[in-house]
Length: 293
Image 1 (cartoon, one colour):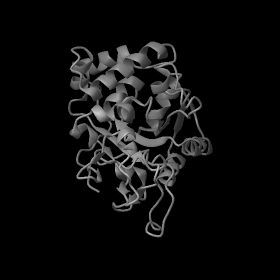
Image 2 (tube, rainbow, N blue to C red):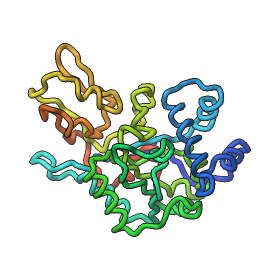
Image 3 (tube, one colour):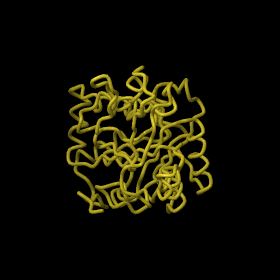
Image 4 (tube, helix red, strand yellow):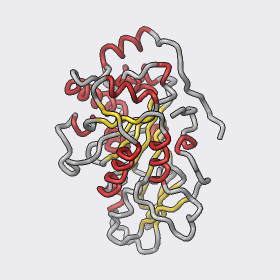
């Protein structure tokens, strides 16, 4: 698939980029304070609050930068109609096994910034893959993982019912301190809960354009005739993709197949089906960056 814009290793950044990296790169020593700043900036950007400090700064730093989020539902089972489709969790495991480097965060910055998650206190923390992930270990935020250890985190997240996501957010380079030469060698894999995750918990407040930066691996939700219009799915859909129209639940084009509604539907009236072209490599789901992981 042709990339619409190719992010690649680049020369040293502008003065404001260098200043921001010095001020906000997260390390073990400043983790508590910087993680709270990180949360305020990310949540403020998603909600478009117009805060004169955070909102303006994020707008400046994200201008022209790539933001891509790929939903990786971890509990998909094959049906007769999807036998030739790679399971999302298997694509994720393939990516971490084949990566040149894997780093596992000591703790989740989203959960830690609010004092920990009450619903998922033992949730596995993020995995970073590619040569750029070495910086997280150098900063004291993560430890190197084997392929087996990384896959074990994926299995645990699936068992706990967490939502899998793979993120390439170019501006996060400043927070993690990833060198410019490794910008295209860096991918973040998160195991998200709807209560704490900065992206998931704030998606409903985002503009339509922001929501569309969150894409599916070709999976989407369909509603069958068992639906009783209880609106449980409307309340729990993190991206606000489901609504009632003419006494029928409809799924909009911003659905990114996270599957959060499937196990929580009281009538089992939600199904996750594969409707897109088959993908054999997680990197192919990213349209604006040629990842070298």
